[in-house]
Image 1 (cartoon, rainbow, N blue to C red):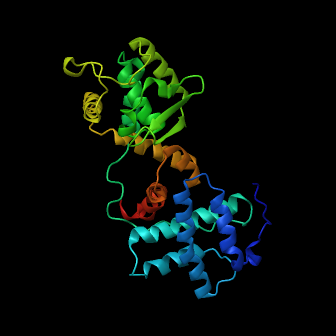
Image 2: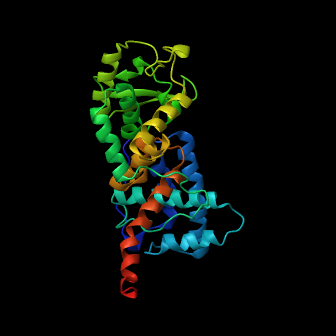
Amino acid sequence: MEMKFVTIGENNFQLSKLLPISRRIFDSLDVRDDTRNQYKRDLTPFTQFLKWKKIETPYSNLMLDYKTHLRNRVDIKTTTKNRYLISVRIFFQQLYRLDLLPKDYSVGVKGFKISSGLKKRGLKDSELELVLNDLDTTNDLRLKSIIYLFYFQGLRIGELNKLQVKDFNSDDMTLQIYGKSRDDYEVINLHPSSVETLNEYLKSEKLKSGYMFVSRSNNSLNKPLTTRSIRRMVDSFHRSLGFVLNTHSYRKTFTTKLVKSLPNLMDVMKFTRHRSVQMIQTYYDSMEKESLLPIYYETFINEVN
């Protein structure tokens, strides 16, 4: 059902209509039902904050003031505070996207820092260049296909080792991937480079059925590669290039590139398939801090002769 809204200006934004609008906004999102319901629940503290402060119209520091309010709440966890902020962020982003607000009031407000953060980094540009250049000339199409699915699709290792030949549709440029069981699946769109490489690999190996990535060792010939075997294969490849990173580094690189290209975190999640918006927010916060580094450097440029 098509949603119909009336454009709301900054000076006549009616808070009494905030909650009904938010429900319609969240209902229109292409996310899981439990995620959608979580967004709705997590917006409630914000509406309570607005009523408590008697805020009738939006203003530039509204999101920042709400964050300060949450910081002073000692009764809730930092992860919960970030969930609350993310819900408001999505709400404002969608209102702005629909031309219902003159601007996105969530821009520039980062989430609360969590000690765990991004535990492992993605590939540096120099490392990625080494990887892609080497794969461009390699005869190991199995390794190339695996790396391409990690990098161009952001696949998790547990998704990759479950793949079967029938899951790949070359004509539609899609791949069916699985979670913990064959009943837990979704279809993703493939990058042209992934399609081309998979076609070459399957043709060279003459694979028409069964698991897509199988072992070549005598002890487990033609059995599906285990996650441990895939890790060893990729680790060995990285060491041959002079650096050490795990398979998940490609997913981090994949996500970082999308975050830099797509300003809306909901759009990013369509490709990364993250269940938690908090993880995506961590990438945005990291990118924002990186963008401020030139200003930081410039501030002290005259301090050193």
